[in-house]
Length: 191
Image (cartoon, rainbow, N blue to C red; front, top):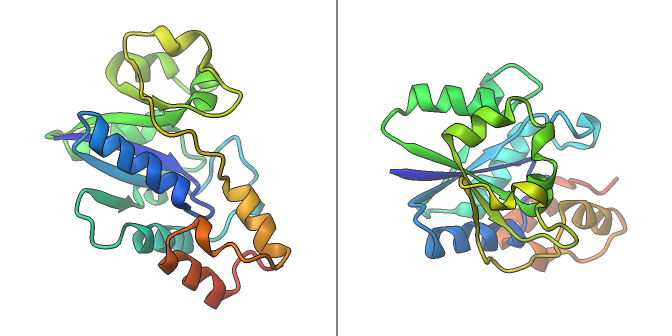
């Protein structure tokens, strides 16, 4: 089975993430999408992150009973900070029957050479890349392991959603309803 790994902080998960995941499932050869919730991205400040268990729960709420999606906490059990190469190695050992691929935006592709052991990732895994505003993907966009996917261009960001909630704006339509209700009920991002 070909599984697309959609890594992210998902702080919080929003409709942009869901649209990209849905597009990858319907318009590529990926058969399942695993949302891999990252406890700590080495390039992000950890203090701005909602607790990882809450972010995982928000992803679980967002995907509902769709069996082609999975919320994964695999990185919670691995050494931190999380490096994609370590996660891929662990997953390949644990699930040798699956063929894994990475899902990322052109912004991440552009900075991909900064990733730990990026050459090894490119050698062993395909990258399914969706468009992001002001990022063309850089020199790696023509690499044989890179598949540029003409997915919808999404301008929604978790940062903007958090800021809107903090400013007491109604952000309900930026995320699945169950996610919004949970965030509102728990008063997440309000301070």
